[in-house]
Length: 599
Image 1 (tube, rainbow, N blue to C red):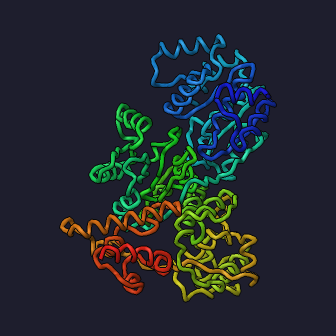
Image 2: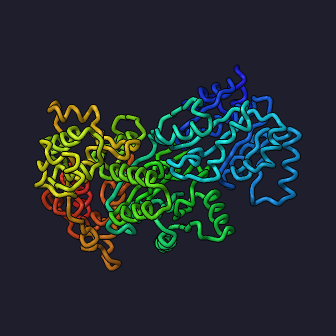
Image 3: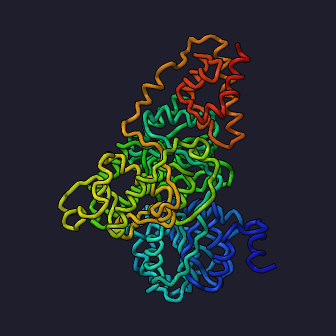
């Protein structure tokens, strides 16, 4: 048995490694630097903790959060590893005693914040010791292109100057191509090997809903989850408090969490969440990084996150134990406006603002996707997969319309302008808008100028987003959001393949009115209560069989209509709100049988 296998078995009690772990560990044991991107729950901590035990000298782990340090150090102590940390929540006496132990070599793995590490006194002390490895955890924080940039992290780029003979390793759960390159350049001068362990989380189901009444939509999603742990991400501090109050009034043990709370209150909420299994946290992005709770069964967003990286990282906090877990993103146009406003109003450089806007556009592409959500999500990170069979688009495919000619119009405009412009410029060309930018570049004289003027600007914006989400076009962030044609798109442009798009509704849906009609009240007769119970049981049975959330089958509002109208035929069943052609063919017979059994 090799040293690493023996250590794995004796210290951690595992008989085998997870995918990718052993390659990373072997690379570090060869004293080589690296950047590892691993999905949440893939076991990245083990990748640096195990080599640290086998090195002759000590390892420093740079961590951004007190809670993360405490969790990892306590876990290591629990398996007999000599680990410690120093942070702002500790007394000076505690910190001094730990530093004494570290200088004597008693502590093998030492956790510290970037602010404390980069102090001249700390650097001087560590230079007098032999540090085998520095580990930068949550490494996306070092990059301005990452989802949680922190200025104190950027100082870590000086580590290779102060410690030229130490290994510099970096780990993160999410980083796109540009962010990876930036991290690697800053920490290793571009010399570290990049390990990509895949972004696919097969146990997560994905769903997106257009926002019409987020409280009702959230409650539907949470039906039957009163005894599960979950996280609800909200746009503002006020929204977290409203959300927690609403869920509490509906039988959930819900608490809010945001940066404006007193420190003791935040600690209490987090401690309850970590120790109890049926707590729902309604939070801003202030909550979650480094939360090592394996049995979070769901993550929902009541508004649009800031980017695909943020979204991926936040949903990654569900199902770390590998068991099936669900995610829901509820978004509206107002969310998009707010996100864009925050970017434009920030003090960041214009280059940064442009790239953040394009990242936000990529998330909108995910929301608009007509194909498998998992495929759309992974394509952003340049990965592919088979259709997942579990997301909302796989289980209830949207109505598709033949749109090859529209696609060829758009791609022709993109091709004829050198694949160097963003969607707004392409849309203006298609609609024949002769503005100064188009005239200066001669784009009012190309063959496709004005060919799509019969369709609205909103239509073309949605249509192009769908072409991106289906991997026929791609947004090149490094070229400031220029739209490029993919190999798949070239086949459509050449007429070798047809293209179908999800029907585009250009008017805002008024689902709140639709759902307020025909809702059962508290005075319904007992037989109706029994029927509703039977219908919910059938829905739950089907949901378990298909491994999807119950609301994917039918919403509560649709079940209520079944009870009120008691349809007897397929035709009557088809008239219920929420019953489309696919659901009619798939479920009508099953639910009609339940209804008719009661009559």
